[in-house]
Amino acid sequence: MYKVLLVDDEADVRDGLLDEIDWGASGFTVAGTAENGKEAMELADRLHPDVVITDISMPFMDGLKLAEWLRERHPLVKIVLLTGYDEFDYAQRAIRVGVDEYLLKPFSADNLTRMLAKIRDKIEAEVAEREDVRQLKEHYRTSLPLLRATFLASLLTRKLSRSAIEEKARNYDLRLSGSGYAIAVITPHQQEGGGETASEHSLRGSGDLDLKLFAVLNIAAEIWEQQNLGSAFIHQDKIVLMTVFADSGMEGWTRQAQDALETVLRSIDHYLKLPVTIGAGSVVTALSDVKYSFEDAMLALDYRLVPGTERLIYIHDVERRPAEKLRFDELQEQALIRCLKVGTDEELRETVDAIFGELTRTAAAYGDLQVYLLEVVTAVLKTAKDADVDMDALFGAGFQLYAEIFRFSGLSEAQRWFNELCLRILQHIASRRQHTYKDIVEKAVAYTKEHYNDPDISIQRVCSHLHISTGYFSGLFKKEVKMTFVHYVMHIRMEKAKELLRTTELKAFEIADRVGFADPNYFSFCFKKQVGVSPKDYRSRIGAAEGERGE
Image 1 (tube, rainbow, N blue to C red):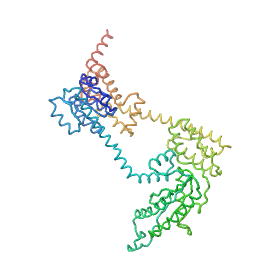
Image 2 (cartoon, rainbow, N blue to C red; image 1 turned 180 degrees about the horizontal axis):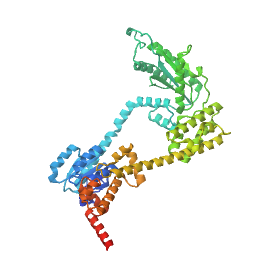
Image 3 (cartoon, rainbow, N blue to C red; image 1 turned 45 degrees about the vertical axis):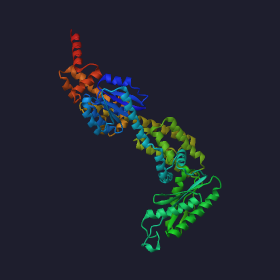
C-alpha cells in the first residue's frame, strides 16, 4: 500500500475523501490528514507519504507553497492539487513546480479513483524501471569480474565470517570450497637505467605500471585457470594468485601449485621480458584465514632484498612457521568491542567463552598464549579509552590489566575474572551512554525553551546547535520526552501563550509574536486546536473564573 497525506482546510472535504473513496482497492492507505500547509509539512516529515493530495487555497500556507516545499524536502513524493475552476490559471503554474496531477472541483469519486490509478501506475512504472530485472542482470553480468575481484581482495585485508563468504561465493559463482588455501603475490621489479627500445617489443622499459600488471595478469590467470587452481586478480598494484586446494590430496595440489608458480615465472620472463618476484604464503585450512596467507606472501616478498634469495620465495623457506598459530583475529576483536559498547550480559559471556575457548582448542606455546591474551587485553583497554572510561576510578588507582590477567593459576579462573571485569566496563559504558542521551535531550530542551519565540526554530536548527544528526535526535528526543520535537515546541508555545493571556492585557497578535508565530491567524488556529477554545474565549473564561473566586 502506498501512503497518502490529505490536506484541505474544509473538514467536510477531508471526511468526504476518506468515506467515499475505496483507498485500499486503489492500492493506497490514508496515513494522515492536515488542515493547512503548515500542518502538512510537519506530517510529511514524520510520515514520509508517497502521495500528497492538497487543496490549492488554504490559510497559512497554500497548496502551491506546500508543493514547492515538498519538491525540495521530499522530491520523490507525488503531488495532486485540488483546485476550483476560478483557480485553474493559478493551478497551471503549479505544473512548473512539479505537481504530478491536478483535479478540478467539484469532482466525483470516480474521477479521483481514476486519477489515483494513474498515480499508482506512475509510481509502479518508476519502481519497475529501477527494478528492471533484465537490465539489472545485464549490468550485473558485465560488472561480475570486478565484483569478484573486489570480494576476493576483501578476503586479503579483513577476516569475514564463514556465512558471509559462502553467500558471496554463491552470488558470484566462485569455486571456493576446498581443504586448504594459499596466496601467492607477484610484483614487477622497479627498473634502473632506462630500458629496452621500442623495437624490442618489450614491457621492460615501459613506465606504465597498469599496463605491466595487466600483461602479467593475463599470463598468470591463463595458467591458473588451465590448471583449475583458483583465481587471479589485481590488488594494490600486485597480482594475487589464490590457490583453492581440492578436498582430497592436498599434498598433490601443493606440488601442482608450486609447479604452476614456476611456469608463471618462466612465462612472464619469456613473453614479457619483465623481471618479477613471487612471494608465496603459507597454507591455511579456512577461507576466513586467507588474509594470514596473504600477509605471509607479502612478508616473503620483503626477502627479495636479501642476497641469494630466488625470484620465487616461499615463506616457509625463509622463516620457520608453526603448523597452527593462535590468533586473536579481527572477528573476535569486533565481537568483544561490540559487546562492551552495546551488548547484553549474556552476549558478553558468550564472546568471552569463545575467546578463551581458542586457548583450549589450540596447542599453543606459553609465549603464544601470552601474546594472545595481551592482544585481548589491549582490545579491552582501547575500547575503554575510546569510551572515556577511567579505569583507575572504576577498579582502583594503579590498576594494571596487563599484569592482573597473568596472576591466576589457571585459565578458568582467569576467564571468570576477565568476564567480571568486562561486565563492569559494559555496565559503566551503558550508564554513561544513558547519561549522554539525557544530557543531549536536556540541552535540546534548554535551547528550545530559550528560542521557542523564534518563528524559525526547527529540529534542523537544534541539531546543528548540538552537532548531531536529525535522524538520531528525533528518535532520542521522542523516547526521552514522550512526544515529537514539533509537538514539544507547540506545547511550550501554547503554555507560554496561556500564561500571557492570564497575566497580561496583550492582544492576541502581540502574544502570537512573543511565542514565535509570524502569522497571528495561524496562532489562533493552533491555540484553538490545542486548547479547545480561541485565545479570546480562553481569557474570558479565566477572567470569569477569577471573578467567581473573588466573590
